[in-house]
Image 1 (cartoon, rainbow, N blue to C red):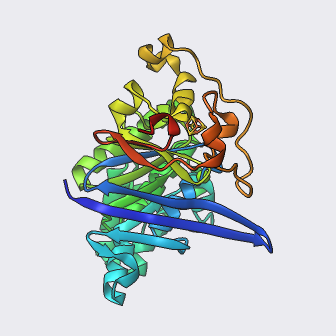
Image 2: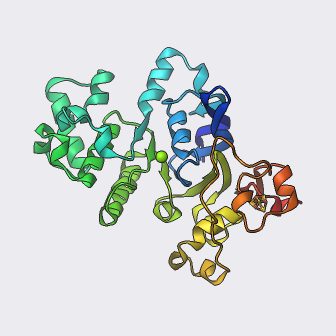
Image 3: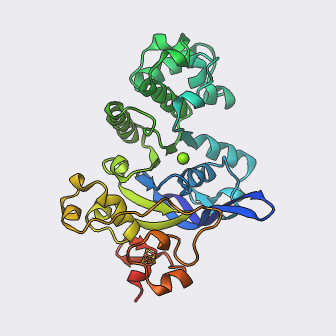
Length: 317
Ligand code: SF4
Ligand code: MG
């Protein structure tokens, strides 16, 4: 299948002080195929949100390249840039914080329509009603305010706002993490349904593998600014290669009988500070299998099995 988004040696560094730099996204390369849902997983501070925001242009990359629909984003003309901005949308984790409390829901949903001057008057109004229904809300909700809705409903409003401009690619930045467990599946089902009917491609970000399992075609696992493993979703669950992924999966043994039989790998402590990551392999301070080489040499991200990539010295030839 065709690649919709290609990321090449992408970097996003934040300079917090004279000698303090956080390498939130540090030399990451991967592709997102047209029509797929790519699940991106990592603990907080792994850089997954920063990666998503950099791809849609909310952060300026510190290095590397983003290729959208076959063209380098940095080299697009003004008009092409406008189209790309419209086609790449983002849904945020906290639907409460991302919806302006003083705006009516209809106007929130129409933010993109207004910004790109797509529709006005009756047509605009009809489109708002149609979008509300599309996400499981009602036309009369258009004149209400965000605080009158539940968390799940607010996330539906955020989804409708993203859909309004007919996007092709949506970065969903932890869209279900702030929701009650009982509501999470409903929002995921809606997003899956929209992917099919609207032909969307997603980068679906979550902090745990269980949340992306059912929706993702492929999954990437990040740790301290690096991609540690990338494979088909099923393969990731049945045959995790990286000790970090194995540890994440052994925390949810019920969903994975094969892993449950393996020795449970416990993650020791919290991730180290991203301002001062360990030398060599960044996971080594928490890795139960760390070797001498792991402190000295950074493992390269390579295809160890067909379509299955990982960065770990255990797989050095
Ligand atoms: Fe563990 Fe070494 Fe592999 Fe890093 S490179 S995950 S420390 S075995
Ligand atoms: Mg985040």
